[in-house]
Structures are given as C-alpha cells and as structure tokens.
Image (cartoon, rainbow, N blue to C red; front, side, top):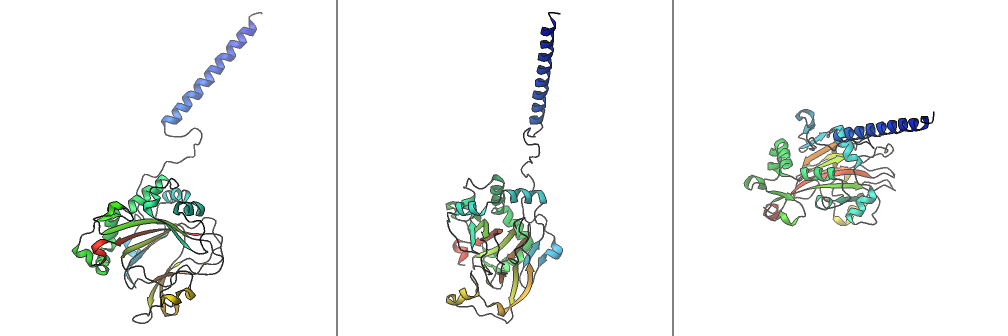
Length: 311
C-alpha cells in the first residue's frame, strides 16, 4: 500500500515521456515532408513558368487591326497570379519604394524594375517575375509571336541584332535594346477623369504590355479600360502641348472626337494586353469614376537604345 503513490508517479512519467516522443516524431515528420507545423496551409513559392505569354493562343487573341496587338484573359495560372497578387506592393509601399510622398489623384506612378530588384519591399517571387520579363528569353518569346510586326515598325532591328539589357543599369552599355517591368498604379480618383487620352508611346518603344491586378474588393469603379483606336481621317492632327490638359489629367495627344474605337480591353484581374508600338498604335484609358481604389498594373516594355534608337 505504501508503494502505490510511487507506482502512480511512474505511470504518469511514462505516459508523459511517450506523448513527448510522439510529438517530436510528428514534428520531425512534418519538417522532413516540407510542411510547416505552425502553418499547414502555407504554399510553396511558384516553380513553374512565369511568362505572361504562357497561355497565349494564336486564334482569337492575336489581332492585326488597326495595329498588331494581343489580348490574353487569365494570362497567368491562377496560383501564380494569387501569389503575385498577395505580394503586390500596397499604394503606400509603392510610393515609399519610389520616394514619392504626395501624388495627385488619378496619377500614374511607376516602380522601375532596376529599383524593384534592389528593394527590400519587393518579394522574391516578384523579383523573379521582373527578371524573366526583362530577359533575352522573354524578348525572343515576344519576337516569336509578333516578330514580323516588330521588324516592320522598327526596321533598324533587321540590320542590327538585338542585344538586350535591363533599363537604367550601368551594365547596359553596349546594348541596343533595354527592357523594363514596372509595378505601377493609377492613384485613387476624386473626380471623374482619364489618366491618359488618345496617344502613342515614345518612338523608342518597341512593344508594351499591361497586366492588370485589379483589387479583389473593387466592384464599384467604372472605367480604366484600354481603348484601341485609329484616326477617323487618314492622318490625325496632334493637339498642341499647351492645350492638352483640357482633354484629361494625363497626356492627350489627339482629340477624342477624331478617334474611331476599334476595340476595348476591360480592366480586370489577370488580363494581359500587349501591342507593337508604332506611329499608328493609338490607345487611351477610359475615364474612371470616383473611387478609393487604385488601378494596379504591371507595364512590360522593350525600348531601342544607343545608336539603334536614332538609326
């Protein structure tokens, strides 16, 4: 009878040791299988293709009129898009990364790839995404789809093979094509307006692509779509720079009434649009309604540089 308390203590100690051993084995098993004990729902970072062109289909997505452009709904796999969306910089952090403290309403703010790759604010997956879309591999991927249109609009590339580099890097010396992938947004709207009216991009631009990251919660904003336009007449007359502000907040080069709408690409999540830039590649952004949400996008571009720019 005197030994019973000691016997009970031994049983309790044995049970405790057994449970602790089981827990340690379970934790080891969890770690060795690549999962996290404290967060079993965590997902591995994306290891597949990062290209915005991976879901491109020649039929129905490549359009020749009024200039060569392509539109890809659901451009990225859903899981890749989800991970990128989760890591998209907040408006405040994008301003912080660019060094801008105050910006006007409906204003375009860009974070260039060269800056993003050096920023601690930008997640690793985003840096990989930027690196791929500023690589020679991506330039060749674009060229495999719209190469003839590029050479027609930029005949200098026929004579001088493209040597690509990252825009705004000192190591781009000796390159004739610089590439960039910019995280960007158009700031929230306090008055009905367009960020850019009908215009063409700079003559040094070879191609431009836009991948939209519309906020999941944004079901109230109207507008922000991309309009594909052409002149109603054979040639449109440009608006003098001193008069452009009356047509919109941003740069408006042509009067909207002189434009014929040829297509509209809705501003929606995971939609990608790309066009070959030329003197006739006129496009604009439809006015946005008053909204607390920014218009988020990634701008993927290639531009001529050095002697090729002026060839």
